[in-house]
Image 1: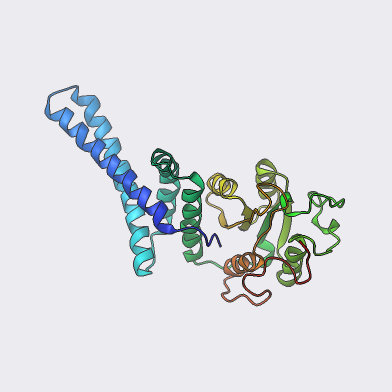
Image 2 (image 1 turned 90 degrees about the vertical axis):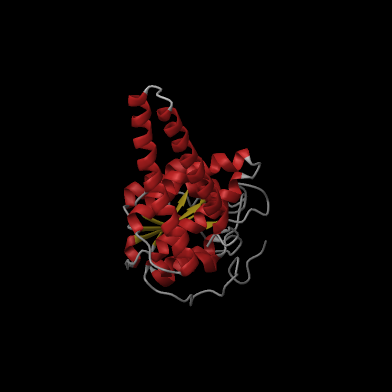
Length: 264
């Protein structure tokens, strides 16, 4: 899942953000030492100090856990990651790094956190949420309202998603956009979601649906964004099995982009 991201990118910018916050606290201490408006300065220092302690505890716990493969304090770590993500995006932009690079890294970190939260869901508690752009543009069968309208011709990954649904019994829905995706989550009330989308939509959707368990799978865009995209079905299956509390993929071989026999 989100295998093209590198966790260290997001972690690196998170640590830079912590250093900036620490330097700001030192600057306020300097202001206090010069006898400037101390009441306001002390107030800002207390706020910055509390934020710094909160974020540093979460990020450093996450960093240590990823390095030494140890357990993590789930609540504070997940909240710290969510809080520092927008700052990391802004810092990346200042350094001239594409935002999607940071988003992919954030998604890898988020998926790692989600996978380490020990829980077992039933198939009926899981929603696989796919974008409409997975469907062929010239297909005349509309699947955004009812995905079972798909004729399973094998020309697009929807056929493979339906095969996984047959195998595992989860809910499958196709969304026409971010707003509709959020509506589907509210209507179906799943306890776990496997979301397929681009990096931007995944990152924003995960932020909007906290603390719901969401595993993100980025789509492939060989023909450009939002047009006849593809997805690695093995990654989708891996995410579903993780939410079910299982490990190895058994339904589809790794790296299989479409059902055998599907045409491009």
